Length: 514
Ligand code: XMP
Image (cartoon, rainbow, N blue to C red; front, side, top):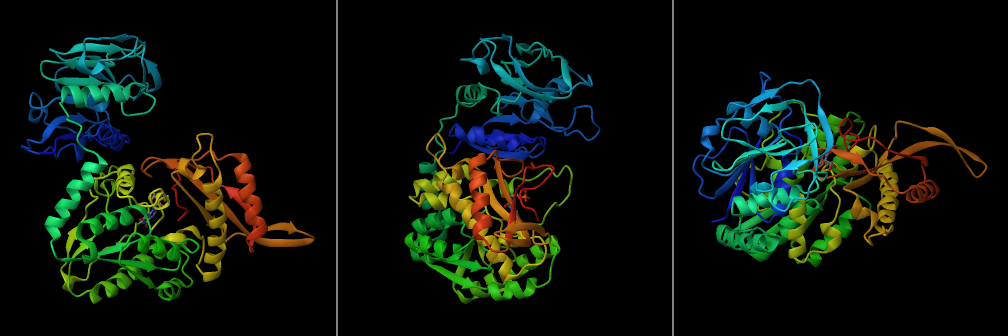
């Protein structure tokens, strides 16, 4: 049986990061809303309670019936998780009115405490909390303090409960990985058997068993997730997999041809559909970002379904859905910022069953699986690319000419990013989560080229660092790289006379402009 850690999510920004850290310890984990603890699951070996945007004193604060887990599993409470345990077990949590944020050092550490095994004196941790724990419950012992925070960690080791006020999952807690290792491996007893190789082996055999001789359809996008999904399925069921790749005309320069060639190289059977006329005609004159997304989403489903219907004996539809797409959001704000478009709305009469072999993986794990499957590096390391493609990177209406301008600028930017080597001998492209260009076609500015005045559009360059696209920071690209890209774009791409660099982080901005 596969062991697993349950992470109960109280809405913290770093919950997914906790999940990734657990997986990095080759241990399977599931992130569930705080009130969805499974009843009796013998594969659970431990529970982690996440942080939260709320204070335990808020009327809306998320509450958990601790009696369901206390004494049954080892528990690690992080930040709000620690405060909640203290508060609900008879300790005291006070609203001191001052937020504690940033680096701190553990000036006192109980080296006998199991989660601090191997810790250095004064180990650096990262704090981010509003309330302060001023008394711990009976039966609990102080395990670590900083200058400002007396109860930085406390535990009831008989009951197997450990609480930390700081965040072991973030990079700035220098021995956070050690702490999680102590909890997951030593305390919970993880056998650390979750790896890309074990995943491929077990998934291929499960898929083989589940699908048998049935026929499967899969929508390819050129991106990492659907490509890895296809390769995995191909390994399991060979020719019984048929892939459909729709070209809506707003992919990157020559991408359709390049990706089709890569897929053929992998031995996949792919039907390529050039539906660009339909998309351009339906998008004619449309300038509103949400409307563009809706039209593309609708057209995509229509084109995909028309192709899928031709495969009359198909029984399954496979999708490259990954874990972050599925983690049930606590919807604290409840707002749709942008509607996302992915394959949806299957042809009803086909009554296909859904197959999502990557549904438990984080993005970096998908990449590792791709590597394990021997896929080309360039395909595995691709940056994410939005379903509606360059349509959401052109402000204003969309025409073939504008797409061509953007494709040319984008191609220069991305190819130079691949070619620019960093001191660690990897490319700049590999240091960035996602990069792309935006055509500001609703704006014109004056320039001068040779002896002539120009009055043309600017291109904005976007590059971000991120771990999950939920939050992102603008990438600090080297000035010489920016200078080179800017020169080349203005020199070579007709219709562009100015290049800007987008220095907004998410939030409050988003990665895509539309
Ligand atoms: P935003 O712009 O919301 O983007 O910060 C977050 C991430 O999602 C990608 N994105 C999409 N991906 N279909 C997709 O499959 C879409 O409609 C879509 N819109 C945005 C975006 O490129 C970034 O990686």
